[in-house]
Length: 600
Image (cartoon, rainbow, N blue to C red):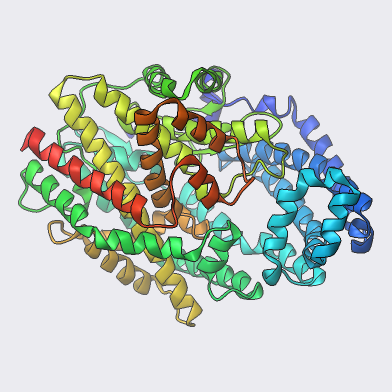
């Protein structure tokens, strides 16, 4: 009989996140939804001239927006957090849909006001700052809007584009429901012969099995379900790519990628630099694959072999409590206040810990300005889960400090820096664990894990970024993205990145269909750039001590008060150059040599 997942109703309270910290009852949530709708109605009825016709009116508009945005933030967190823990629960899916409808109505109402602010002459906006000094509290937000002046349309067109966002996001929602709720997960016999239902959360752990039969059958069965619906997945992905290009063209950008990076105030050269730097250092990836093949002692290395630890299963089963303790000890280098907040999150149910039936796959952190961050994960009692917990709490504390030190407008840090704090936590945890073991096997296992991080983050996410770039370029040329075309393109990239020492099994061609981040609009490249940045920052923290820590903590509390590139420069790393990527890949090469010396 297959190992079944818990139903949500069976999950112990202490293992779930405290949604009651947002609203004690659903009635209280619905009451606030009514308030939001009323406030949005006022916003809709506010003529643009009245909103920005004087400094005092513009200030009043921002003050009202500040209150409304706090309510929206809390309401969205409540509805989405409840919906994500059971995607098959129709009640909470309906509440989520209702709340998203409210949010999109807000965006539509806000769009013409933003457009009007952008269209103001520079002399006028500077005069407004003098006439109503309170406006200076919102200056960063105002100037970030005005930065995009040449890509901002008339108030009427902005309202039209905003009203289409919910429709434009339908492909992503359909993808999530298909992959997470509607699919019947395959079952595979584990090493002991017991049938296991291979959910998204169990897929990689099954590929880490020392039993090659388990790995092969899991790989083949799991991707077979995507292959079965390949045309549906291709249509969804093409629809998302076309939507991205539509919005980019509407805003007078040359490509969807340029529109996406400019929205975060990141030069497009950063995207190209990443791909070029990785291509220039592909040798390290091929050396890693060659070492893996050698240490595993196999004649053929397959794609289903790239997750299994080179050094065999780690004997130690890592409990959730142990993971918390080691993470807190590792992050002690960031100071007493940081660790105090971290422990508050551990002890006060910021985290939804374990997998249950219908729960959203993967892991994420969601900040909440007027409450506290919320972390979703599916803990699997292994090293990967320990690092996932460290990673997501890095996000959480970044959100916590940004909310603490900024108004709600400036607290939302740009996506480009979103993965820095999370991966910095991982680097510090790795350093701590390596320093606190003399066991050769455990050290080798940790280095193996670190090598996997480089493979999966710097190389694999760059491969994803290149796939996303190439597929969007095809759409922008008017070419169709059929299932076979997407498979051919993805397979070719896989061969290029992994090299000759691995068999690129035919099933890997459909892997693009299981990557939810392809619906996030050029998000994935930032995993790789952030990993490179965090490697540099963690080294400075460990070698320079307090000065580097202070710079880093200021970065965490800066929100979006400056352009993300400038915030990272202030923290000590320049991502406009290839140097951080080259240095990170150099470290990867050194780790490969260390592993070979340890085990070769």
